[in-house]
Image 1 (cartoon, rainbow, N blue to C red):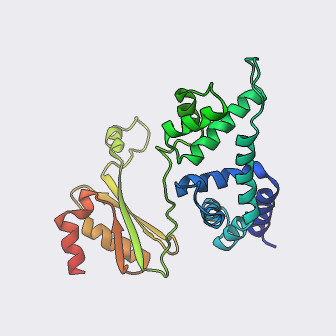
Image 2: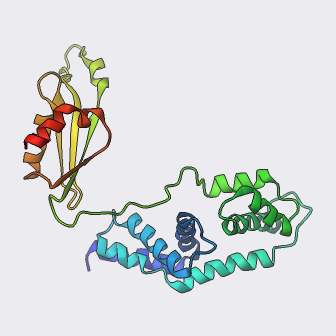
Image 3: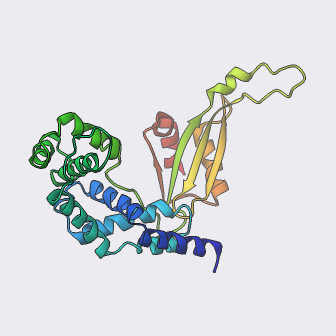
Length: 261
């Protein structure tokens, strides 16, 4: 068994044995599905496995990442949802003590369950939470959602698309290092750093993740020439080139070069 296979085996065992770790991914899946209260267990399971697969594929190969994800099963989704139902049905009794303890945890669990059932809508979640604990305020609900979910910043979908074969799609982007201009004066006795390069072009094959990086020299090399050099280093031209809306990549010069080639 290879080291990656052994690492994957241990990661899967950890997910199977550690409910807290497993529930973190289940909760992320329910967040991503948005209408988590109405999503079926199978839908939540599929989304959970997708998140786990995308999380671990950088550490192990795709086959092992899928194996790790399969450590989460339907009964785990049911257990998680049942724990939410039990918490809402039997919240711990409130205590007059101001120190953290079961009462405080019960309040947090009530807010957590209310947010899930009301699809993260603050006002309906507050009303639902106050059925079980009248001391819950809007500030409590806002704070709990921001600290534990932060939906404003979490991506709703996970992009796991990979090309079906080499050269099907390349992705390209420009990066800049203007700070080199500030290093034109080298300290006496030290080698002067190159400052001619004002940008670089990064190209990656989305199938095998092979990359090429081409420095762009000011006034000496246009973007079309940089793309041509990058494709040469990649071993050929792609069927499709995907870029963002960077003006340097969408201007007339590179567009006309691509039409010519």
